[in-house]
Length: 152
Image (cartoon, rainbow, N blue to C red):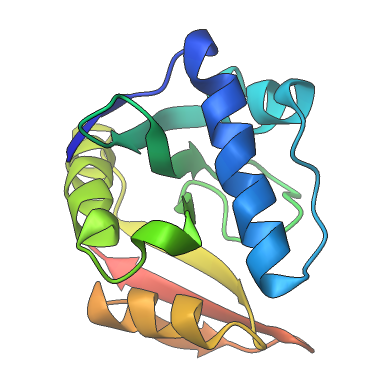
């Protein structure tokens, strides 16, 4: 397993990861190439989007890091990082998340971020456990959501 920065050529594979998550959880979310491009790869607030690839070169997970702008949809304080993690259910609990976070944490430090926000559905126990394991702590709980912060 290795990681690298996502490129335009990875959009389809990233969309496939999102489709696998939808199949596994039943939670609907956009997953087409256009969405992946705009949300993760070419987003102007993006600091880094890292993909994890298997030995065959297939995308098995990705993690985005953006800088929170004013009035962002997560109500994250301006200037903090916003993280999003998406791992194929076939590759969960195999160290993919830890590997992705190493790259993301490095990018956050290089960007001068002091804090990273994770916005997680309260009905997502694996996501909550993941961010706990990465050192995030709950700081806010809007209805149906748990927001966790990692101080760098």
